Length: 371
Length: 259
Image 1 (cartoon, chains in turn cyan, yellow):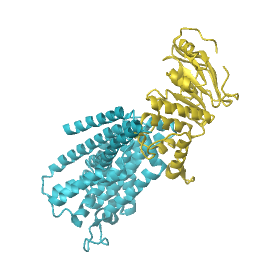
Image 2 (cartoon, one colour):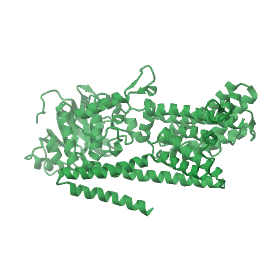
Image 3 (cartoon, chains in turn yellow, brown):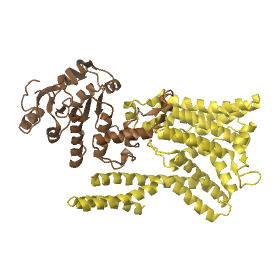
Image 4 (tube, helix red, strand yellow):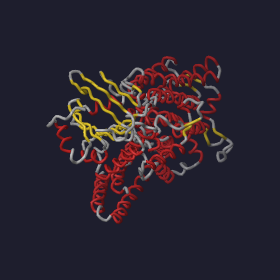
């Protein structure tokens, strides 16, 4: 704590010092402030690499501590266990970038899984079951968006909190509080299957099909956030909603759209969950929203909006999964997993706070040394 | 006082009046701005400068009076349609997207993207074309930024102001309204923004400049119009010999001649 405090105080001192000194002889002074610049640039680059650095550190520590950790089979386990969090986190990312939050994704997952399993049990059609699960998720998301934007509720916390309890209640009601056994074979394949053609896992394979789903969703999300106009609008709305209105960006549609996508991805996650358990359980998504939010935050997205990337959110989800897996392998009490997740959230955000301080320092240094 | 260029005015405001309840914010103000002319709006706090520019840019509706742009009546048009007519306003808050780079700021809401048969939101952005256009524009305005890929949050006050002004003129603007563009800036950065104003003028863009700094007004403005309690109380060229007169009008120590 004190070390960081000192660092933050000394950096500005240096900056101010240089400015005073550098004013009369411009050539020498400029070189000096460029020096301060470079140090900051390196520090900033290190901090911006934050989430992957945390993941790498975890992997290194765990592979030293456990012989099993680095095996392909265990890697497959981690990927399979993280798939649901990854998909939920990618939806949550878009919402958080717009300064919002979706607390309902866990309940939405449960509801979508129950609806999918019920349709499969009663109709016997895989197509119908999958469509029903995805449609349920999307509809819940649309309702969230409409309640927030058109219902003018003051913060997305409120409609999505209401949806958390409502969707959860509906899932329990529809399923009579019981797990609906059975899921379409294609869903089982996606949620629990392994791809034998990827070498290293013997006849069964080690690479989970669910990871392919995550990769596909992530690829679409990268396209959306980096290349589509809509993706740019999502970041613009998060960065400065008022300026977005002034620039003619359809802010309301953009806001509704992110909740729709988040809901749809909760439906996708429901399919993965159904496949994993060969069932639709009304409590299968309980507390999953917290994992998703934690993943996005560990991934360096800002609650203040406008900042966050797909790959970092995935990294955040993997950090949570690797942490749980590693503590499991080491035979540590499962309750420590939750405590450890809490610690990682605080560390990740604290690093981000330091990054913010350094960036503003960077700005004032730049003003001094600009030609 | 004649206008700087002998052409028709870009903007004409006639007898603009606006009340907020019992408070008279504007009480029959008229003004003209010609292409390539820099008009400074002076006045104490509450004199009506902000109300006037907000009425021009479509944020406030006038109770009476008219605003015409190139002969087209834009009185009480919406803010979006005033912008579409080529009037850009840079407010003190700059309205930048701090999380985006300069190119993304310039093209926010009007991204260069295709193909055109897709709905606007689903089009693929052309990052390269937007970056090129941005670099061209900044080059023309001689704005130098250390890193075009950095987010605006990482830039200094003057650079941010320059980006906001450049964005305002990026899209074939006829009139740029600058609200206190140098208020938060140091000496060197102020000088750079004033240079930018001169370049707008050279490009034939009309400029309305609100500033509390008489030095800055004297440095770039062709004409200064003084508002006091919602009325135009006088106008003069902002020169050294008129300095005393302008200040007297601002503080209400002397009656200005009618406009």
